[in-house]
Amino acid sequence: MKKIILFADTGIDDAIALTYALKHPEVNLLGVVSGYGNIDREKAIRNVEYLLELAGRTDIPVIAGAARPLNGEDPVYFPEIHGSEGLGPIDPPIAEERFANRTNFSKLFQLIKEHRKEVILVNVGRCTSLAIAHYLSPEVMQDVKATFVMGGAFNEPGNATEVAEANFYGDPIAANYICQSAANLTIIPLNVTRDAILTPRQVNLIDARSDSALEEIIKPILDFYFEAYQQLEPGIPGTPMHDLAALMAALDISGLFEYKKREVIVEHQGTAAYGESIADFRPASSNCFGPQCSRIALNLNKDIFVANVIEILTNHR
Ligand code: RIB
Ligand code: CA
Image (cartoon, rainbow, N blue to C red):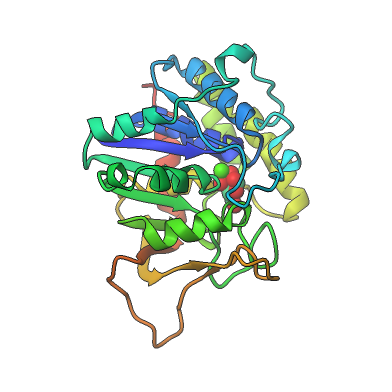
């Protein structure tokens, strides 16, 4: 069993990653840290509560993450991609007292201490909450087994700007800190998650086999996401499952990714390259092995990805 804590900014691809984690027989989801990003922090918490309720898993703790980036600026949200509520056409019917004014960040440290050296952190939103955890308690964070981050774009265009991916762009100070400081770090960047595509046909197949309230939201939210992506990248054959790809990396699925180890810097000085992730992939460069080196995914095997996703999302667990 993989013991996972998911850090998310629960929009649509985050929701699919969470759904996959809940349905995977080898994942023990210990908790979800939900912060600002695609939507505001409160909506992100509410969406996780909603998905856990649909799954009958309200026993899983939802921890309130950060509400803004480390530079203190107001976040920019993405309703045009994820919908005003973060889950496309769905307005989750969750009472405000279940998600507002939550202050339970210490629950994160409690979980890591209870499962010492076993917990895998998977960060699929801005890196703010994860960086704050490191700032607050570097000692406890040494007890984390491994960290996986969806973010950055190497040697390809970004999605937030010409050069920057949205998670790193949303808080490049935090992203740079995590890339430089988190031990046993794996980065699944945008140039790789762009290939983690589910086509409408595959989504229809998953929908045809759905038999639970949680599974029934997959198609409506991915249909919304598909329409949004047609505006962003006209002609794209499906929806890129950025966050799901990062979660799957944590499961060591044979043949899904190839990796190289490099030191990563995230530009955070307010230049035109703000939010850009930089690593040395020149032909003469080689793997690095020091504490500041991250494992970076280079590519994704599309056949293995699709087969695995359909298998897990259609199992009747
Ligand atoms: O760049 C893709 C990432 O930005 C994903 O995590 C998506 O959910 C958004 O947060
Ligand atoms: Ca996300």
